[in-house]
Amino acid sequence: MKAKLYSLITSLLIATCITSYGQEIVNEFTILKTNKDFWECNLFENGDGTLMFRTLMFNPNTYDDFQHLFYKLTPEGEVLDSLIIDAYADYDYMMRDPLHKNSFILTEDRWVYDSIDSLYTACLRMVFIDSHLNINNDIIVPLCDVDPSVYYASWAPWFIDPQNDIIVSFWTDNVHHFRRIGLDGTVKTATDGTALFEPNYEQEPQQPGGDSLLLYSEMGFGTFSQSPLTYYLLGGYYPTSGPWPIVGYFFDADFNLIDRHVYKQFDENIAFDGGNNEHIVPLEDDTYLIAAQTSKLSPTVGGVGVAKYDMNHNPIGASPMFGTNHCYPQQTIIEGNNAIYQLYDIGGGWSTHKWGLIRLDSNLNIDWDIILPENQIYAFFGTSMIILKNGAIAACSICRKNMRYGATIVILHDDYDNTPEMTNKKCPFTIYPNPVKDQLTLRFDDGTEPESVELYDLAGRLVGTKSNGLESIDMSAMPSGMYMLRITMKDGTSYHEKILKE
Image (cartoon, rainbow, N blue to C red; front, side, top):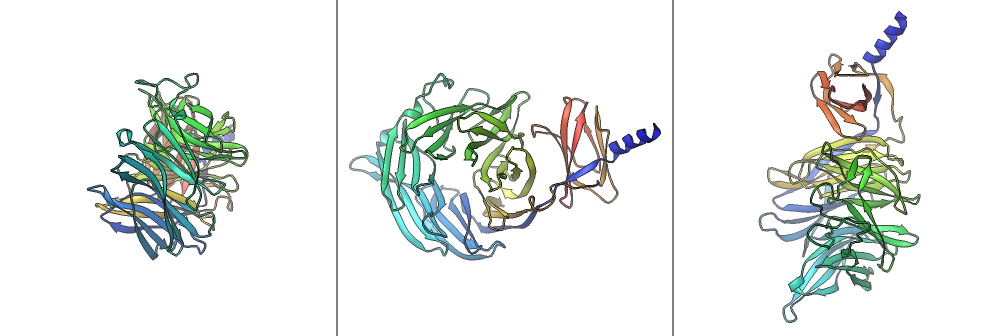
């Protein structure tokens, strides 16, 4: 009996630690220190292993003098070449040219005013640039004329579809416009309609103050299915209170509206809370993901989550909610083994930010999550992430220090699939008691010091934190159940331990 009691006490005091391996930041640097502000940035890898960086600069005081800046640089941060192109507007996207290896297409909207006919002409500009920063073509494509008395335009992100056409979406007043444009500048399909502004009240709640549906300009837009070819567009309602539902619109290849679906419930007791960078990512197994802000009403806490659906919009599962209030999903990348990488912003608004990077498996379980170097990141939409040919992850974001603007690039090596996921070893600390009723205590070995101690519930919400050598977290008022304790040491080693609250 005494031996069994000693064994039980020892197991509670000296927990078997779970140590995450494989996430190593191999390089981090800042390029371009200037007094000009940045609007967004893109990052690509060239065939020779160099990087292509692009950003839109402008005068932060007058909000004019737009310019596109391109850098060709090494993964170590050495700038090899640069290019500046005058810009016409602040809606712009850079994409790979599918017909020419190691070439890119810079696209932006351009408005031309005809004073005789009193009309604006919405145009798409297409600039073709190779990896050596040579401009091979610069095309202006007229899209439609707009009466200035009702002139208001909001653009959704445009993209290149599986047929190698550029798909453009924008709306003026209560008219939505789709354009399919060939890479030679030919407008192949032009559709204008009001279907998006006619709510279906059997499925969608009526808005206060009118019947029109207000669409978010930050919405996701892209290919939903390649067979048959369909597209999605995300919008939503502005309710008087509570989370903002997400509305998904689905179109056939000729841009006829064929389906719509309202996404309200993320998981039990947690709702979707749209309006900031939500997006859809199709998977290979006839499913798709939605990455979005999420929110629990009571108590009011928020974060980011990833939910999975089949192609008929039936929910399959959801990840734990990760991050905290004022976190925004930025970008989701699916690797060939169905590893899901989600880059998200921590902070919100225009204050100092941090990046969060999380890896999920195909069942939306969390493999690992880390906080990347912040370096005074300040814009929640100015990020880009790519997977390099060597398997490393490269991410860039706008940063600001002492009113000097730049871009931070972080390269992270993920060896999760090539090294043991977890290892059991003696921890440099003890945890007691576990299970716990009131106070959870940690005592660290001599010579060791934690960088952070964080306690999360199973929905991924941060519910407790400490930073001293002798930790004590008050769990007396917390609901009974399982929690996850994450301890990060000064050397970057991360430990995770399950805590049972009685």
